[in-house]
Structure formats: structure tokens, C-alpha cells
Amino acid sequence: MPHRLELTGITKRFPGVLANDNVSFAVRPGEIHALLGENGAGKSTLVKMIYGIMQPDAGEIRWNGEVVTVPNPKAARRLGIGMVFQHFSLFEALTVLENIALGMDSKIPARELEGRIRDVMQTYGLLLDPHRTVATLSVGERQRIEIVRALLLNPKLLIMDEPTSVLTPQEVEQLFAVLRQLAAEGCSILYISHKLHEIKALCDTATILRGGRLVDTCDPKVETSRSMAEKMIGAGLKDIVRGEGRSFGAPKLVVSRLSTVGDGHFDVPVRDVSFTVRAGEIFGIAGVAGNGQNALLDALSGEIHGDDREAISLDGQAVGLMNTTERRRRGMCAVPEERNGHAAVGEFTLSDNSVLTARDRLGMVMMGLINSGAAKTYTGKVIADFAVKALGPGSTAGSLSGGNLQKYIMGREILQKPSVLVVSQPTWGVDAGAAAAIHQALVDLAAAGSAIVVISQDLDELRALCDTLAVINMGRLSEARPVGDFSIEEIGLLMGGVHGQGEVRDAVTA
Image (cartoon, rainbow, N blue to C red; front, side, top):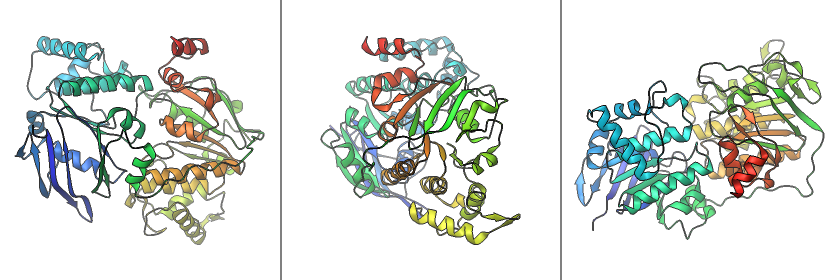
């Protein structure tokens, strides 16, 4: 039997970049095949060529043994190739049925389409009301729309791009059940994810890319997560080193009944949030994206504030009415989730971006004049200490890749040695080696006496890094407990909206 999909010598160039260099691999019918690699490894370019979004410069694509050209996504779908993108393309004001209809290649009468949708949902256990408005759905339910839309075309190959990045652990298991059922029916799955424990649990084969080249094809069930990560980065991974006999000092950040006002129809404000972070402590906040994380960071950093001076205290001083600049002067630094335009200005040099947040703490501005020498020296240290790939402090932020910009932003804040650091998605888009270095820098900062708040969607990151954990859902924060006291199942239930401790424990043991 021929391979379902076979790539031979696929090469793709962009100005100054060789995105894919002579890549060859094959996917069998009914196989769940992982495509692994760090940001910039060439995964996205490769699947865009398979799906017809762009064309290879060299090499060939075989489909069921025959050489094919895939000029556009519609041609890919005609062949039997479906794709579920990481970022959903849905209209929130429309219903599930209306969104699916917009994504179909041919016009189907509404009643017939609804019947087909219900058949697919029943077959694969994808429970959803076709007449629900998308704005009322959870992230996991929205993903089901994209999956149903792809399955309506009876695909022979389904490409999944980071499908679990916004799902609870329970929703991940439901998705895996669907994918295993599809594979058992003969559909091939090309699965892209950075969560290596998921690859081990789900996939039959893994193709690993590094720098646009194929470096290995392996069986993930006999590999370890660490061995696959080391193949992806081409180097050994360093374990987080923590000091012996760690203890926490006095409270440095105290949040008491903090609430914010929603800034827009779909914004999720925080409601009655309280927690304390002590010197030397790393406090983790888990949650599915869109549950108030951005509002919480903005409120803590001073970008937004309410009318309660006592809602936030920093080193014993009430700062609830202070702005960002005043809070930074008193020792608080912050890294927002959105690095482009929020954490850094793309048109500014890295030195100028350093001035934006470190000017007061590191004396980069005197009597209204910028000390450009101090800014360049500090920026050079950030570049060196965090292995930022940049031509120097004069490089613009916009010229850096996403992962390198993230390393610069994290280094810029950590090296200021803040009393309190609040960071959202600290290792978003960086490779495994850089993520380990950032984690170690955060641990070292805490060991020096800082209090750190880490807001992340990556449960593995939070469990490895944090001392204490809480979960945010619809703007409400669960009880904080030592991270070792939580099971994955309990975290998943809290992420899904079960808040009462009795309810959670009953659901876990049910």
C-alpha cells in the first residue's frame, strides 16, 4: 500500500532564509505522525506547502503514490487534506452552523448541512448545539467547530497545528479520543505540538526538524521527552538548579479583593482576586487563555487601576492607585503576554526599548536627558546573558525573531533585579534550551529575594517552576496551594470552572 503522503527533497527559500532544506518524510494511512521542531525549524512552512498556501522551490509531494501539485487550499481539500489551525477563524456574532457554512467550498442547504453536522458530532462525540452563538462558547467548544468543519469534507489527512495550546487536560483527552477514532478509520493525522508528553501519548511516529532540516524520524513511545527535546535543539538540556533548604521571607506582593472593569464586550475582568507572594516565592497562575489573565497583569503592573488604594500592596506600601512608572520606581517589573507593541516597540532599537522600562531603576535618564551609553551597556549585557541573536543594541526590536525578542524582553526585566516580577507566558515561542535558561534565571531571581508571579497556559512549566499555584477562570482565582498538592485532573477541573474545593475533589474521585 502506498504512503498517504510522501515528501521528497522539499526545499523552500525566502530572502536571507532557507526555511526548508531537502526535507523528506512519509505518513502512512491511519498513522498519527508528529512534526516536531522549535520555532523557526520550518514546521509551519512545510505544512503550508502541504495545504497549498505556498509552493515549494524544489522537491515533490506524492499523494497516495502519485506526484501532485497543490496550488491552493481548495485543491488540498479536494485531494482530502484538511487542516485545523492554531488560531481559529470564527465570527463570534454568528452561530456554529453559520460559521461552518462560511467555511464550506460549496453551498449546501442549511437543513442538509445541519443534518450532516449533527451526524459528525454524534459519530465522534463532539457535542455542540449548531444554533449556539460562537461568542457564548468556551475555547474548547470553538475548536470543535473547526474540527467538525474539517471532518465534513471526509479528509484522508488531517493537519493539527498546536491543537491543545488552549485546552484543559480534560478537553485534551476528549480531542485525543477523536483523533484515535479517526486514525482507526484510516485517516492520517499530521500533529504539530511542542508538548512532548502529548506526542508520546498520542503519536506513532515523530519527524524532527531543526533549522529547516530533517534531523531524525523516531518512535516517540520509545523516546523520552528529554531526548526528543535535545534532538530538536541539537544540545543537552539543563535541569533547573534550586538551592537547598529554600525558605520564603516576608510578603512582598499582597493583592486584596482586586476587581477590574471589563474594557470591551468580550473582555474578561478579574473579580475579587486575593493572593500573597512572599520573598523568594514563585507563584503560578494557570488557566485557559481569555479568562482574565491580561486584566490581572494590567492591574498588577499599573496599566489599569481601580479606586481601591489598598487592593495592591508592594513591600508594605499601598500602590493600588499608582501608575506603571510609579510602581516600577518602587520595585515592580512586568512582562505582558503580547511582546509586539506591548512589551516592546518594533520600530525602536533594543537600547531604546531598554530605556522605556529601566530608565528610572538603572539611571538611564538624568534631568530629562537619556544616557545612551548606559542604555547600550545594559542592553549589551541583556543580549549576552540571554543569548539573544541580534546584531547589537542598535538592532530594532522588529528585526528579531519572536523567540529572540522574548529572550530580550525577559532578560531586560530580570536583570533589573525587581522586588516583584509579574510575567505572562515567560517562554512563549522560545526553544527548549532558551526556556530552560529563562526558568533558571527566574529561580535565581527568586533565590536572591524577589517575589515572582508567573501566569502561564503551560502546566508543565508551572509545575516545574512554581512553589505555589492557583487557577484563574472567568476572572476568579482559586485557592492557592503548594504546587505539589494539585493533581493534573484537579487543575483541569478548576480551569474548566469548578471552584468549590469539595466540588473539585468529588469530581476528581468520581
